[in-house]
Image (cartoon, rainbow, N blue to C red; front, side, top):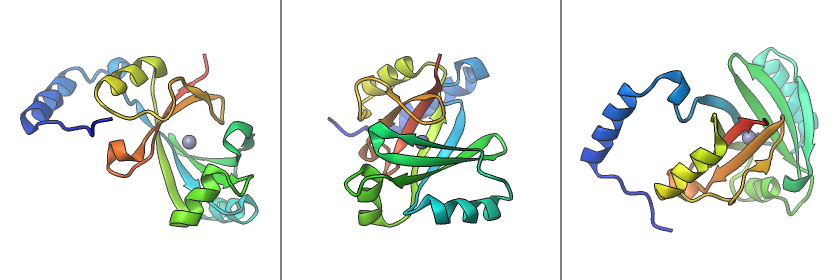
Length: 161
Ligand code: ZN
C-alpha cells in the first residue's frame, strides 16, 4: 500500500471544497465520538477516571473478538473509552507492552461506515479490515493503520442500524 501523498495545491482545493460542502449531513467525520485509552486494569483505572472526569462510568462491556474489556464515560458530546486486555496476547496487552499505558486511538463518528471505508481506501488509506466489525457500545467499527495517519490509530464508528 502506497503512503498517502497529497500535493499542497490539491490540499488547498480540498479544503475549499470541504468549506463549501461542510453541511452537517455531508460531513464525513461527524465528530470525535470517543478517545480510547489503553490501561492495564479497569479495577484501578475506572475509579481514577471517575475522579478525574467527575462522572461515573456508565457502561462496561467485553468485546470477545478483540479480547478487551471496555469502560465508558460521557464527557460532554464525546466519550472516553478505557480498554484493558482480557488476554496477555491481545492487541491491548501488546500495545501496552510496546508503548505503555496511554492514548490508543481516536474514534470518529460516521454516518455511513461502508461509504467512508470505500472513500478512504480509494484515497490510499490502509484499512485494518475489509468489512466493519462489531465494536463496543452498539457500534460497527473499522480501524485505519497508524501508518496512514502519522502514527494515530483512527477508528471509524457508526451506530448499528
Ligand atoms: Zn474505540
